[in-house]
Length: 92
Image 1 (cartoon, rainbow, N blue to C red):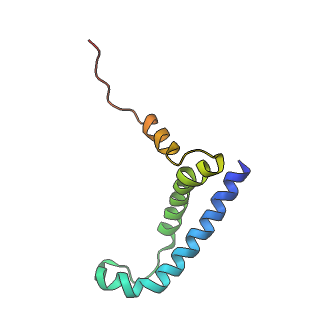
Image 2 (cartoon, rainbow, N blue to C red; image 1 turned 45 degrees about the vertical axis):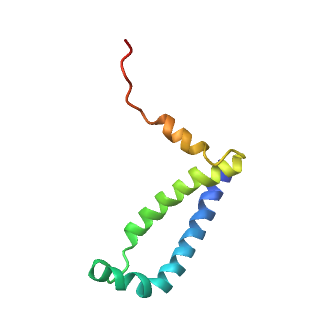
Image 3 (cartoon, rainbow, N blue to C red; image 1 turned 90 degrees about the horizontal axis):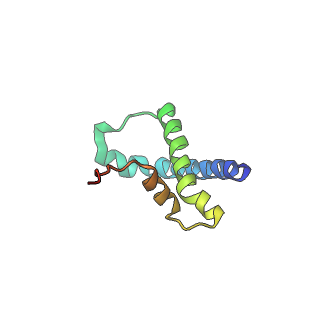
C-alpha cells in the first residue's frame, strides 16, 4: 500500500509538471488559435484538481500497479472488463 501511495504522488507530481510546462508553452500558440472563444481566458483550479486526481488514479491503476506487480499490462483491462456486468442470455 505504501508503494502504491508513493507511486500515486510521484505520478501526480510528474504529470502536473509536464502538463504545466506543455500548456504554459503551447496553450496560446497551439490551442487558442484553434479553439478561439471556447477557451477560457483564465485558469480554473477546481476542475484541474479534480481531473488530475482522477487521471493519475487511472494511470496508477492501469499502468503503474501492474508494472510494480510484474503483471502483464493488460491485466487491469481484463479485470475491468470482467467486473462489468455483461448482459446474459437465458438458457433454454
